Length: 235
Length: 235
DNA sequence: CGTTAAATTGAGATCTTTCAACTACGGTGG
DNA sequence: CCACCGTAGTTGAAAGATCTCAATTTAACG
Image (cartoon, rainbow over all chains, first blue to last red; front, side, top):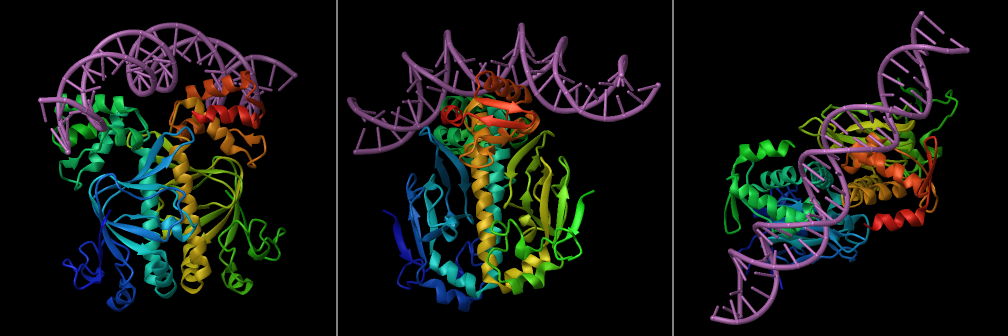
């Protein structure tokens, strides 16, 4: 049961309307004038979810897209043989569910990995703004392109080369900031579904990295030896 | 050196202007009125390329997007270690190079696999139409979404499971029509770059499929035993 | 403290890569 | 016309990586 709050409900403690949204420079409405935003504020909800919570399921018909404000979530596709494959990781500023604009149904299942906050945007709002404000086109195209870049990354970074290189690339990718060493580890199962390897190999490689001091873990936190991992990520 | 012809040059033998374009229902301008098309016809060239010809290279700055009219081409990314990975196969109706609308440079190298005919569309035309005709937005979004679906397919179909399953899925995917058995084989090298396996394994598996009568090849042509391949594609 | 899920480890089977050799084939030039 | 050459495809054998299945340890949590 997500914690629910209307962005524009002044009685809500946070009163996080889109004009003051902390990730506004990341999200869809970057280039809209405040007046335009006010017209659209009403139906946009901010929601927070616990880890493992699904936002929507593949095939489901829906009427919302989601921008990630904080946390981490995965887009999953189920294969004919029943196993599942993670096709994308979404972080703050990313958008999920835009395919609703084109088809009627979601193409993936979206599931929170960490505690995650999102803005839930009715598709009608996007369509309305899209018809009136060309600035949103560019923003939408940019989101679509970002999704494509991320999909390409899953192919070239996470589905290419031996398992050790894939895990190394994943750890580097998970770092909170490009230069920083800290990152949150995924479960071995998520690693396996993202890297196309088994849970056991993922576990063996992570354990090996720990022994070789390439990573130092404390609970879910992880400190990376960036240069060391980069060497392994090469191949 | 591509064979070059202005779509709207009435002296050109084919006189394949966009209004009568044989793949018009597939390409970008499906929903535009003829009057709108006329305004944009001038700068759109139709080009044909021989196999192996590059349309553009990753990182290159460019001003054109391409719709595929016939043939087959690949989008390739080069990895840090020098090897290359095919991240998408494009067939008639698909679009290449739309990222130019968002960034200034191409994100992949586009290379023809078979003899390929394309329409080369200046980005300025897309921007102009995008600003004036909402119908093009929807079409653009649909193309972007199609690219995403194709990227997802490369992940789930071509980068998941053992090599035999990947090859089987590729052969099924390459069939000209969903129900038909005929398809054009890729070179073992392209298979390897697309499936994330070595040339030798690709060769071994194709040879094995031939021996087991799962495919029958004649030159580059190939007849698939669809149910047989589907069984292997399961996993 | 007991219960359950997640992570780890071992050992053998299986798959894939690597490296090298060999074949088939289409041009090219003598 | 034919010998030669280069490329793509094929095959073999051994090494290496990954998977599978089972057992064990660790962590999480009521």
